[in-house]
Length: 274
Image: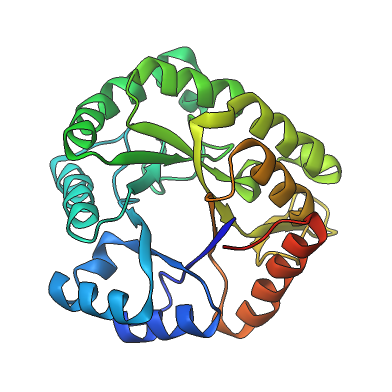
């Protein structure tokens, strides 16, 4: 398994991002295209080479395939350009939602064959561009979006019909109330059913709070319901030793514990971090 780090949204500049990656001994960075554009590509290339790092994914999360507009389509194409410039293998975005306020929040029209067909039609031109560039478009799964379950994930990939489109497995994003107490079994089902359609993985967690209605919050890996020893073992078995596990959405003050937890889980699973 390869270990990566994504620290977007914390106001860190390029130098600080690279220093964090060096501190935690990861081999790759997850960068949103907005982070890439904070400095010239030549500076990124030099700093990455000096640090022995690579860019794992370039984020184009601003683009919502079920609510596209010219501005976000330009962002997605710029993510492809940035990935080419930095020799990154893929870009990443969500599969799509009809929600007008957030590209990973729910809407009643997300969960249908019609939504899958619409998302596929929206993504096909980007897939063709990725094919020509020798890149991948990885779609980040989430139970509230069109990629609401494992069958929907497979169906969308098949409808797009391009070898340049794959899944980014973010286990935390798929945990619903009914999966919370049996998360390992549910994630195993996803990894085994999707197999080689999965390209990369993210590592964070979710925690349920005792309250009078449903309260499930995102949290750093190791603070919630997910057993990452199980997940890492499954990833190694079904996806291979070069698959990236990218730790993300973790405040800097909680990053040491999250990174230590992932390494401990890899050791427990008998999986080497390469």
